[in-house]
Length: 203
View 1: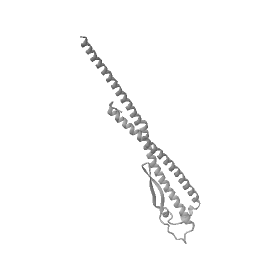
View 2: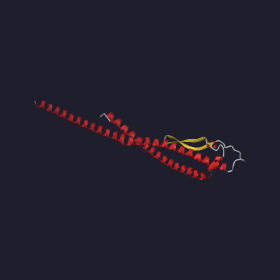
View 3: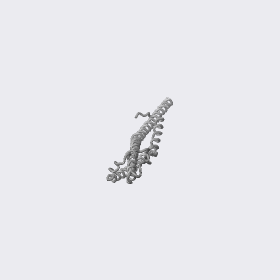
View 4: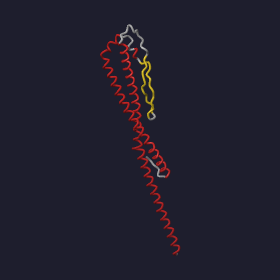
């Protein structure tokens, strides 16, 4: 980094350092909040995957019976996946709310009673799958933002702030040396004038 050894450059470097030191705590706080949110969502994801796995295991025994029911797949296709947005440190992240399905229309007299309960369980499984997708999408957004924020924190902590401090140190030394030299030259000039005056008096 090229720096000018001037008072103007010293002010510019000091202003930059103040700006970095003011902005760094905000970035560090953002990094902490992102870490916390990622941890919470990872725990939620583990919980939803466990619930889905348990439902799949419990459904294994009767799942084959639903093959007899026509249109069963059609009733399991989500009509709408409802999500909201949550703003986390300036980043919009999707939040799962619910899945809407088309009403399942079938003859209550001709269809076995367990179809209602079976269909309900399968829809819960589809909802869990969609919720898992939304959580994973949110995690991907948050992890990307955490990478960028961590890079910025590192840039400020390890590069920008040390560079500005070093530049200020060098400029101050240079200006101090210049002032010392100027004082030295001034004394030499003063002595020469005094010597010249003394010689004139002596003559």
